[in-house]
Image (cartoon, rainbow, N blue to C red):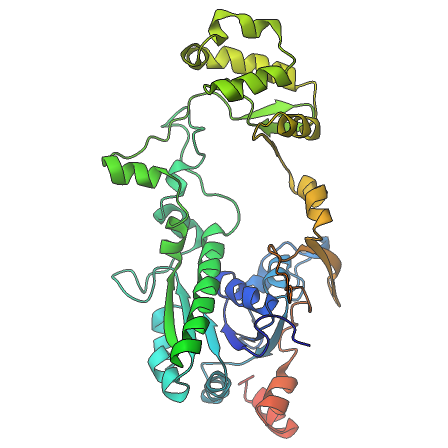
Length: 404
């Protein structure tokens, strides 16, 4: 039985850190046979990024690496050596797709450009992810997550509508690897489109993904505001906190609503306290002008309830309210548990841990976590000897030469 909707598709991943490995993992989840190529000895940079079990760094137990590389096989090749490149080109010549996220100049200097590889495999789909894309004046510039977040315009308005002191509250970078993940999602999506196109045309193509453009494409409505008016939106907020404290954390969505329907529901939810009959609450304009006072009263009421209680009450009242969840809250959310989102993965060195699973459902051939992330070079013999037809003696020689 097929392992997924992409069963039979072979993907070679020459990726590092987040965007390339993430794009390849998304395809691996759907059943593609993904062979991850790492540098001998060092491996993927993500192997040296925490968190680590017990807070003890180890190249095989990085939480980031293990999450990004589930469902793949792993080999090592030194592409700076001729024998390593030859093996790599042989792998690519028999593959459906190559995903890489290296500098365009590095790829070209190694003789691994799309034009060179396509000559050996006309049906090849090559997905190249880089900070600024394959063309333009920035194409060879370096771009970290911090660089991309701010050059992509997201940082300027972070925190959104919460700035009360323009000079004192500087722009922030969001947590994690948002630009890298956005680039990876975009790459996987375009790879699927390219596969569909190849079914029609019988031809491969080069997919050029810019992380800089990917993160900007997720921008908020302020982009439309600038496009329509030519004005740079202010970073200033109203001074009224959107995230208000409650009995066990923070909660959002309850405030001095200008919309009469939502305000009426909010009033009913609070049990029609006497103060809602005062002049300051009579009209949307009055509530706007007295928002600080009204919100303080709402916060005082909220402090008697937990996040779960407010969420249940608010949703029953028809209000789009929500708790501000910690990671512990997320892991215990009954909705995630009901849908079986988290899956346990056993690793020989890291142990058994729960990982976020597949964030979508298919009626047939549902993607799943089939295998843990590979150890460094774990599948060298399987791929190089069994699939590329090298003898065990040749593999030993390749090890000795530092090619694998």
